[in-house]
Length: 514
Image (cartoon, rainbow, N blue to C red; front, side, top):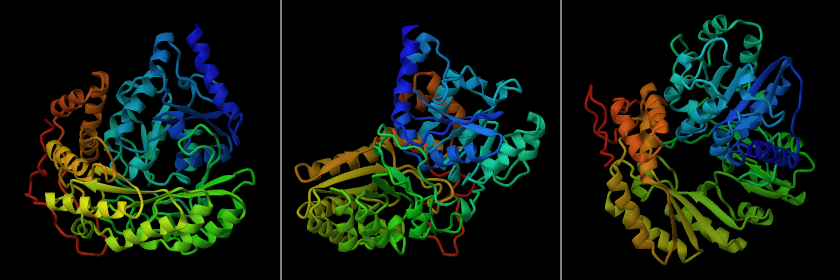
């Protein structure tokens, strides 16, 4: 069929633009699956790191597969989902290994299994089917909704665990393999065992994660990504990646970072949870820029910025400066232990203006516990002040409590409440700053998946099968009896404030999704 050839031609044309693609013949084949489209998946450092690790394992090879942009064409032409490197049907591989970044990618996993001709539910698969494995950033918080669909969960940093998995999978029958993995730290085998919420830690020798394949067809366009640090030294109450996660921040010497960047990489992105907390970040930036490269940095912290650091970013091609405030007011920032002050953010804007940048992007959250209209008004007032220094684009996301954080169990503020806050912001900043809100409805769906168990995964499957509308999600959560977990605390050696009412034996209040 004409449509099928077009699908293959599209993949081949993207492959032709890649640099660094790996090809290897081996007896054990892994289809490395990303449940979002190619341009998103190829921007994932974790996905690229595991691709490289599988290829480094004797006797194993990996081929990539992504959620298609044109799912309907696959269905209409009855084209089985195929891998990129060889265009081979995914169902013929020994293992499907999914990297899941966040909750709303669950439906992409369902679609990819369906297009592969495989049962979505693990209970409907057997030894005739490939082993279905899932890992990725989602496992740092709440992978429970994945349980009904996967044979094995790989929890936490997987650079070492992937070798343990491949060694066992290549030498053991399915039943023996599952029984074995259920006893190995870092793995969870639904229905058989494995510690919940275990977050494995990769050895320092595996660091840093870095790009294997450079392509112009990504969110970050031909940029080589590398992490000068892993983890975070901070304790923000809403964040999964904090100082209690795997021992906090591990830094990589600039000399090692520079030695791993190929000569052909003309654009370099330094990524991590707290890149500007690296003690030698300015030195690393200056060296990269002096070599003639464009440079970008993720997770800029306003309290760590200096004029020299911002100047180096500008020299490296940056035209916008992006910082996160993550609290509508100082009261909210203090409540979540986000150690930024208005003065530091103002200073960041002044650094950007002095460096000749065109815009300040500020990320923020609304809907934190105890937030009031006065806090939103403070954000309006402060953003207006910033806009007098530099044009401001304000990205606003509704707060979603994640498992294994001090704010675990905090209720969602409610759809009407969040939408009212966003509208108050839009009206207050009209003509003064650009407001870019994310959807309150989909934040609520994310919240339910983040705060519920395996039953929420089954609800996601129901909603996906019913067309994926918000009404379908709302109905599915209700019919599956999904209720958010009780609030929990993470031990990090400090007293944590109780910031919402907890009634013993009763879940936190679940807002109406009306």
